[in-house]
Length: 307
Image (spheres, helix red, strand yellow):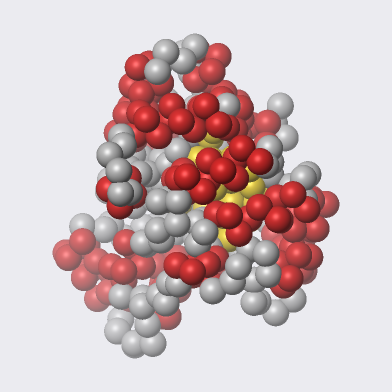
């Protein structure tokens, strides 16, 4: 079904060896790493990644070639793992683009953001308001948005339901606070910074109406289509993914929808089922080849300055 389309997946987690090691150590236990990895493999079927980020990157390239994917936006899913993603990008710049997770409370956070762009090759930053207990309109983040504007950084902001199965499997006890998760928090920031582009994943992950309202009013807000979008089941009315796409197209238009799968864990690898499901929906909605191409790669390429 992908024949004839150039596909850039804008939502892939680069769960490196260092990612796992860092989270395992966050638990405060001194269990040997090999025992922790054995537990993850036997209990959850999670494959231990190679120590080298370059080897993991090659594994992803194999997946890309298998399924006809041109480029991946790799997420450094914790601030401590930016080096792994940067290493992968440096090794294969034609295959990967990097986004890094921001800890808004980090010391010298301004310098860290600039370093991520200037020295690590990052093209976007990731905010997890519910994980770090900060509203996106907090004054602490204002200077970060100014840096994003200066460096043309995309700001990827997770709202709505936040469940991170890999962290749960490892045993990290996150204090996720949903009071920071409403997309309407972004309204004043998007208006204040019209030259900064914001991506909200999973259609708002449960805050679908709020995302539609935001998209209607702010042209610099985009949505990504990633994951199984199982958040649909928490809505108090019946809706399916086809209807979600139809309504999003009505409000956002085809130019502000960005394809992604939320892939990350091996041996599952690339979530081609997500891609195929969405391609089928595009066909049922009667989208033209040009419209589909915008969603699959054109829009993210434009945001990142590739076209």
